[in-house]
Length: 457
Image (cartoon, rainbow, N blue to C red; front, side):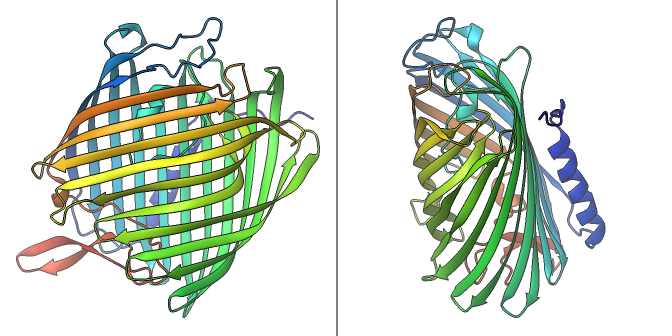
């Protein structure tokens, strides 16, 4: 049975986020702080042994594996504001990747991000976000800074794409120690120009509640994800046509604060995958566990997850087991030396049109950066990145086996310095919510000042 056609314009998620933001602003009190604009200029020079993430086994007509030096120029603007009831941050970044040996494969990328927090009432909080990335597949690997990346299988070779996402999460204090929440997320990925690749649209939602007892919290959460994929392929490379899928998950969860800086989260339950086209599906256990280290100046976490997910760039659903370590922390007490990392291993199996386990796709990421804050405005950094993919598939745009190692040295200049900007909102991980970071405006002698503060809501 044919499904509804996919949207041809990938700005629906952005429109949703803007609408949510406008509603939240209308419900919140007027802001008491003027927005602040920050200019950012970043430049990196590096070397990669596989500049286009070419597969280990050459593909006819595809790019061969080639090493080379490259230059990354990344100017950007950040617009941020904070008040007693709202926190906004809008960021635009333009990236130009210049490959010295093969200038014809040089690419440019555009990235737009928006994140906001709204205190709608003493008992209701709202977090919204949206992003849009226009880039080339192999350039996208370096778009995310170390410490913020994810472990995911990626297509190989060239090809341009536009990926847009939007999400919202609303939290309700229902009573002493009792909290409910709901969230929605929209994702759309579409190939650009003459790129041959799947187009993916996904809609996800979740609703849950939890009861907290001092350092512990227990609760339950239900999730649903609906996805439409046009142009998807079987593992042997033959066309599948339009695919529609639903993933339903129910879990029980437990959170515990072990100390002032350490907190953990564990969840276990069951999920159901249903392919609407064929009426086939299966049940599977679902679960995750994580241990987080959270301080006022940084955070890190180690986690494991077993779940079914839809990879928008691949246009495929995968059953995965993932171990991931990520974080960003100062190495010195004065905060001048920083380390950030995103590392992990993902073992995955593609699902075919009958929701049957098919080809293996494994992904390994080691992304580590060390930075020195020379002055308030100047940051110097050294970054190493190892990306490896191991796959049974042999036909692009399905994931292929490749290895890429890169080393980069760079500098970032920010004016005004970050300490003069409203802080970016950080959602709480602890049960007592003491690690939440958001700027609050408080009266001060001679005017108004911005001060980071935590909320105990």
